[in-house]
Image (cartoon, rainbow, N blue to C red; front, side, top):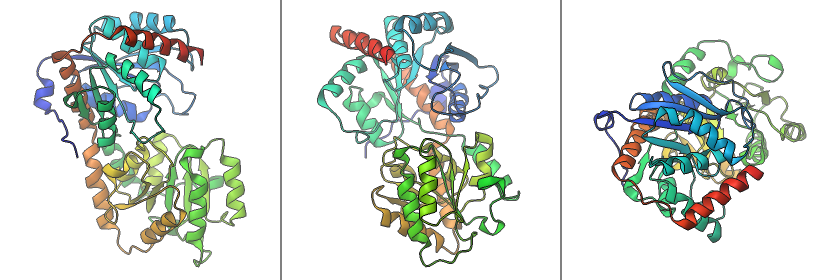
Length: 420
């Protein structure tokens, strides 16, 4: 395992540095990151648009006193010229010492990187991409490496993410840790309250059975293919074989919504699980702790997942977890038999076996404490410290100007994204 580069709070606070931190659309965990960063550097919160085509979040407030700009009112990207004009009008007055962008595939990220480099401002790639997320093609990777001539430093979390940033051209000492975080304290505190409150609602609005408190499986995600919910239902049906029909006996609650809802409902009926599987729908951020605090185990079965922040949320509430080994969070947050189990997302039997193991634990207090201890390694302050370290690295070790081919690739990428 490669050595992690960490920055102490004292080092991060020495001097004054201004960082423009950009995300496509602010959700609750972005606010946790911005708040943590604001304790280390002066922050401009940059949002591409205030609404999202993917997530139904309520628009959150940024921390008090923090400057916030929204680059566009449109959900989709427009012309590159419009993006540059918005950046010049709204980001330039902040006079950032560094710019941090989420990845390298959106128009906003590429436009901000191009704009910053033209002004001698270092750019930080905030990344959760792993080498194994997708099948890699040599020509695509060649083009990415040219784009990466615009980046000075990186912020990620696990070793795979760091290895990929290095493969794209960043020096090892330019890669910092702490990207994939949520507000651990919020979830712990609110889940503690929920444990003494009435049970949250299941499908149809009726409360989940009181006898299921601390004894139900919970999943929370969009209903899309990669979340692997069809396999989860099949595995759960196997789990139910030989068990009685008590609706409070380890039911399964699937929070979320999406295109696959109708097919999942049909599958649930075909498997005879209508009395045990609840689909209450999508829940906003402030409603999630009611489920985390009363569940017995969190399950995340994705066939591919760059990280899986819902696992952070669940573990911050001290839940044992069952997580697919194709989730980037698995090697960092899950210890088999300690705070839960990992499994191959194609192995239905392994998921069923993990569910059975959790249901048979008589006292899960040790697993719950292990989840809390492990997720503490992804506390918000790690984001603030890592970001500050990356910004200061960029200021101290500027990269050479992008090559001519890199500039051509960047211009082509911006045009292509705007045409999609």
